[in-house]
Length: 89
Image 1 (cartoon, helix red, strand yellow):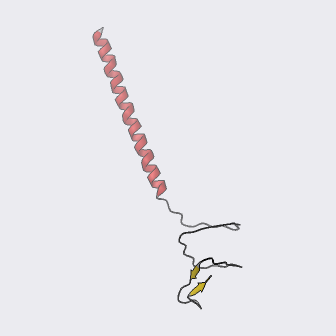
Image 2 (cartoon, one colour):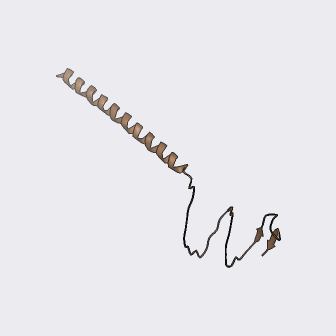
Image 3 (tube, one colour):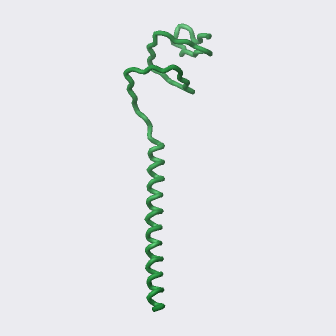
């Protein structure tokens, strides 16, 4: 009887160990997937129309800008090829 109980405990211990191993693999795979998604870069975004009341961008590089009205609250630096390299507010 005692051998049977020990045998069942060993089986349960083995099953618990296997389940723990599968859980660890699943958690690791999830973490690796999250890291991969975090490193995704957006290559191109196209927006046809947008209306924004306020927008603040820390750093922005623009190749071409078409605007009906631009209000500068601080200063605007333009490349050397522009007519005036600095436009005060």
